[in-house]
Image (cartoon, rainbow, N blue to C red; front, side, top):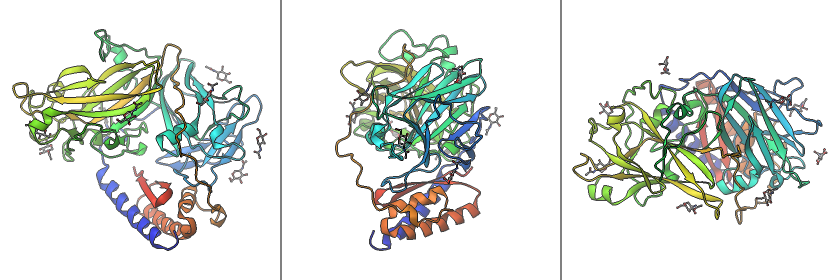
Length: 507
Ligand SMILES: *[C@@H]1O[C@H](CO)[C@@H](O)[C@H](O)[C@H]1NC(C)=O
Ligand SMILES: *[C@@H]1O[C@H](CO)[C@@H](O)[C@H](O)[C@H]1NC(C)=O
Ligand SMILES: *[C@@H]1O[C@H](CO)[C@@H](O)[C@H](O)[C@H]1NC(C)=O
Ligand SMILES: *[C@@H]1O[C@H](CO)[C@@H](O)[C@H](O)[C@H]1NC(C)=O
Ligand SMILES: *[C@@H]1O[C@H](CO)[C@@H](O)[C@H](O)[C@H]1NC(C)=O
Ligand SMILES: *[C@@H]1O[C@H](CO)[C@@H](O)[C@H](O)[C@H]1NC(C)=O
Ligand SMILES: *[C@@H]1O[C@H](CO)[C@@H](O)[C@H](O)[C@H]1NC(C)=O
Ligand SMILES: *[C@@H]1O[C@H](CO)[C@@H](O)[C@H](O)[C@H]1NC(C)=O
């Protein structure tokens, strides 16, 4: 930080990664679904911010449609303090609504299933200490979070800012109330939120398994699992297997985030990553074009080059989840490799937590070449001894005689927690992570920033220390250049050590 080299390197890195994203994250079905309700609230902000192709509406303006409802007008709107060492993200993470008493938001929406996303950036805000957030969130009759500590979750997952995504059904009264309440019996406890999204989803997207009266295969059980249209879900993980991060703006219109799968592959052999950028995907009636973005289906992970190796291991993904819930596991498939054309070309087995759930997975037989398809499974993860456990999905190759290629393929993976009989999705807080104390805040930098700068640019200064101004100039220049080239918006994630990742949200 004592010389000017880091900012220059930083700048080059930004250009390179943005250019890479520009070419690789493409898809024809961006925005294939138009949600009837598409609400984004920037909590604690008194203005509206267009970000990622949508308008984040502040809840703090005098006559906002989304002002919180409170018995005592005691909640506070606050800005994320820019002296925080690991500030990250942009809107809606720059401001927050905080209170030591209950507050609620009311949304007038159509009946039917909705995504509800709650965004959090745990920090010290005014006199609300980062470590004191302990609160519950209820909506549509369900407990989404209980005694939730945003700082413990953030430390455990190493994500300075994060969101929690839920699927809820709004009834015929067409009202969705979301209530935040600090944990009682703890006078320091407060509730807060940085952003709220309410977005409609197609009736048949995740709840279609209900219509299917047979239910879904439950790992380790003979009886299938059925859930109700009124059950609530929490999206625990959504992976673009073998591919790259897909930003909310690149989703099919529902602003879902698809992560790369690399860090969740836990088999000794991590397989190979085929890709076909030229194939024309054919969505059918069973799997409509909004199901997942095209890049999910045109990238995959398969087993490797050698049959002895293919048969010697199972290609495995593991995701840590809360115990004592049922989970819905959706596996996305699409065959696009030149060698795989007929039924029996690539037949494999699927295991969930070591239980065989599918002995004859043949994607060509299920759908055909270039036709996306998915399969849903359920698994019960009950354990009275542990708070968390690993949910694993494993693919196993079959020997000669069963199949032409001893191999297996997966294109996408979604994992949902299903609400329990107490109508709750709440798990327990993770234990504190040792040595995860925040480093002492550096000297405040915000006074150096001209006040007219956009919030996103302000963030960049923080990581820069003494070289903050150089970074700032470069970023400002860069922003200006990009804005001119394409009318887009760019999000910066700035973490200590000058590692900057840039996600471009062009649409
Ligand atoms: C998605 O499918 C619908 C219905 O078949 C069609 O009207 C629409 O144009 C498709 N959208 C895209 C982006 O392919
Ligand atoms: C709106 O935000 C600005 C800048 O943060 C602040 O100066 C102003 O007091 C706010 N107005 C209201 C009504 O909160
Ligand atoms: C500090 O918190 C109390 C409530 O605990 C609140 O009444 C007060 O206004 C807060 N002070 C500031 C400066 O935000
Ligand atoms: C939602 O909140 C409003 C205002 O507090 C209340 O009048 C209404 O009954 C609530 N509706 C539901 C469905 O909870
Ligand atoms: C992609 O799919 C098309 C159509 O099936 C095929 O012609 C082409 O060879 C495939 N490309 C690769 C790299 O597999
Ligand atoms: C889940 O698996 C990972 C990697 O194998 C391991 O580090 C972690 O401790 C496991 N978590 C639990 C709760 O067993
Ligand atoms: C093993 O998997 C690789 C990678 O998908 C595939 O190309 C190969 O044909 C498979 N090996 C055999 C012998 O089937
Ligand atoms: C809330 O969570 C904290 C940390 O996990 C725990 O110490 C505390 O006992 C919990 N409080 C309640 C009321 O559950």
